[in-house]
Length: 166
Image (cartoon, rainbow, N blue to C red; front, side, top):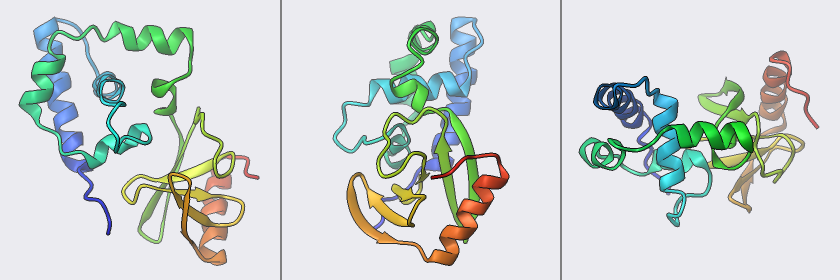
């Protein structure tokens, strides 16, 4: 059974929160700032495996506004600038390609080398793709594979974007 994705709702709410909190704090707060804060705050949830897991949790604008209206977003920037590691660094996207209706993303600073380095994420299906052999994983559990042809297509599209693959 596939988990329900709330990506469009999150996109709308992140945009609204950035606008509202920017006005409340009289500061320029971006959607990325809000996203980082939310993923850091909710990273303790059991269903939270990677930063993009947040897209499978139904957001509530009013609850999020109440939680982040007074949040110091400079903390996110300091953590990223000093460590350039942790949850916030995983969020930076290196490349994305679309193939057969699936969107695959490689994160620029993905700390987790499993199942390959690099590997691709299908955010909506919550899958990782081993770019060496086409195997698919949920967390570390093998769940299937894509065809050799589809793997070749995905790899080719990433290579066109300058990604060095194993």
